[in-house]
Image (cartoon, rainbow, N blue to C red; front, side):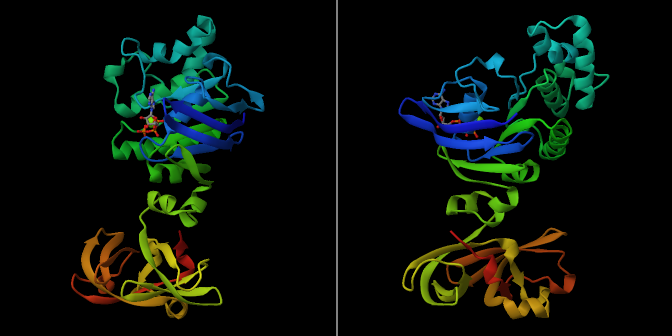
Length: 356
Ligand SMILES: Nc1ncnc2c1ncn2[C@@H]1O[C@H](COP(=O)(O)OP(=O)(O)OP(=O)(O)O)[C@@H](O)[C@H]1O
Ligand SMILES: [Mg+2]
């Protein structure tokens, strides 16, 4: 089942919580709405579910218009942030709830519940009550409850936000596996960019009610369309300067006291340029090969801070007064490890400069 959202606007008084959003979730796709708190993710999800009525726009499931039909007729499974499991019902009855509401007989309900519990690996826990379950198990009850009605569309609103970091990482891959095995069209909401990158087929980055960019995780990360997306996804070093010369698609930008080379730019000489370079796009000179050296540009930098984390090392470097950058290096050999106060040569590939 595909979901089409066409020019949807949802207001609360004067506030446009969702502004003219158009997007399509393809059949079987795992699509994520990602954005900061208050950007309109839940509001959009609730419009799709039928919990609110947009002022403008249309919503289609498989090309059939659904925005005027009742929630329970839309064939949606939902998982919300606060689990929403009933504390007075055991696991079996929690999962059976939606089936009972749909008037399935006890004989039909039993095998469906068993199957759903097996899918979320909770078989054998039928008689437990919510207060006898861990956070991850509760979350899985909520997922089983959404899946048991065999929905064509699964809507999940920050389903992992109540869990600790380790469990969140485990559960997100379980959700992804389950979604893939069932090929269920899923619209997922999170404000966690790493979660979104790891789990999604495509992502829509939202800000103040609008979709800033839509694309596959690698597109969003590597080719952010603007400063908001570049800053929201991953860690980014931003630079601002003036283009002082340009030749063959390569420009030299005066940034504070230093000159930096960038490629793929549109402004004319004399104009302001803002660009970004990811911490991992910088390399410390000792760590790069001779071949890389020939196409990289180098800048001197002073090490202000070193954070050695084993598999990676984080540096804060000062390129000139008032201009600091964050750099990460992976798998740094002990002899290459730099110390606070040292001056080093920092290299980057101008192809990896993001103009934004
Ligand atoms: N029922 C409501 N009445 C009035 N304003 C609302 C209502 N629901 C949401 N809003 C406002 O609409 C905007 C979008 O809220 P929404 O809950 O969709 O954000 P969100 O992206 O889900 O944020 P979070 O990540 O914090 O859950 C916010 O400014 C919020 O205060
Ligand atoms: Mg929300």
